[in-house]
Length: 528
RNA sequence: GCGCUCGUAGCUCAAUUGGAUAGAGCAACGGACUUCGGAUCCGUAGGUUGUAGGUUCGACUCCUGUCGAGCGCGCCA
Image (cartoon, rainbow, N blue to C red):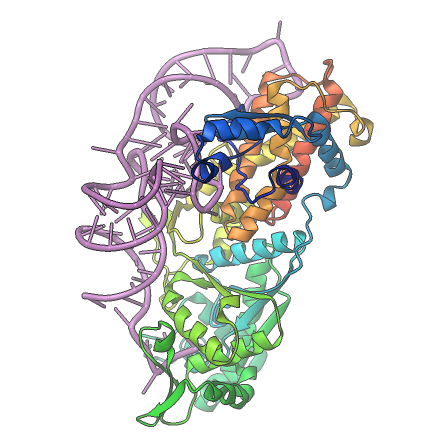
């Protein structure tokens, strides 16, 4: 819809302009402040310019009315135009709001270490990433989701050791001492019992088995993480193992060296990341010859870029923000365009329960499992609330609030609007097929505004996706639902003169609510 | 100390990315049930956008200072 409006205006004005939505719908559907920027150039007042420009649209097909107010030019769409869009959307729900963005995107997210279950802090990035995948693909981008599995390094050893110790303590009932940095928490004890069943009791009797336990535990943890994710409707297309990449280190290192941005000092190999704004140069090979963690990320991003996507997105926890500049520097040194990589930071989440703050440490046993919250409040509410806030703001909420089934729970409010639409159709005894050809014309202001709101979904999705700010989608769904509830309270439908028109209007609202929810991973309810 | 992110109604958050009178929900108070579901709707109240400057036709948005909060500052991952 917006595209055709832009084209129509461009045809007349013959120049670039900003198109926005007026604060108040009574001004019109779209507006442009172009007269302000032309004022200097033409040495005339914005109001005069706006008046003149309005005249150009007198014979427009898609605009019913073009007016100037205080220098703004306001456009009102014609009913034929809006009706045409609504009819298409109702009859082709799956194709509504589709677009043809021809860009491939590799989206890496979650990538939590396979050393334990996902906790609530992971949920934010997970929900954001998955929704970006859904919306992006609907808009025609080719978005591929990927999980980077950190299955190398000392943490794997630590996992093996932790299971081993837990087994000695809880299965063999031997006294053990727990070093501070070991993984604790019940899942480790559960794992130890499982290991006993699958691998036999003897596994805990010899320290030589620790490595075996670590491999075994890693696979178990990946399974666990996958099931945590699937409980909120998330599935990854690809998993990439860090460990499996290390045999490519020589290739990546060769590329790095060609950049002349590496040097040796004190027996270590460094990259000159300060040349690209990093705080300090970084070691990539230790003096004992072992590559650092950064080396793993260098190989991984080399690997990503070799797969030749148009764009790369990483969603990281905000505590990794200091890492961005060194990775970008490395990508540049590998000979790639680091600007193709975009890092989205998901800020910390603080959970409250009865005013009591939870601390989210993975090592202490004191973290909140994502699966517990899902069990408690449901996937839909979790997804909706996490998407409702900009990802870069600190989010705080009380778990108890999710449990309420009234308008304080937005997902409930939206579902209710959707269910109402369904209910009205049931009462009328009519189907979508019966009303699809009705013309939406001579509508009162409330109906016309509701129709227009429902047709905004495509541009909301595009805007939200392109700015990576999915709270725009949840805001939109809340506001569309509010409009529906308001309209419902003020206008009767069944048995009235306008019944068929309003049914079609409701059907359109239903399409946008249903599709909007679907694209953030929530299934709309037909009945409460 | 340095860096990143943030600061908007009592609380949780929006604000078309520099545009028209800064908006929702919760909490408070007052209204609407001969009803297509009142799980809803309407109204009242609540603001010097942390603070001081600057940039311009125009600033919550951009720049500088300052105060406050969170995070980061291994050759851990």
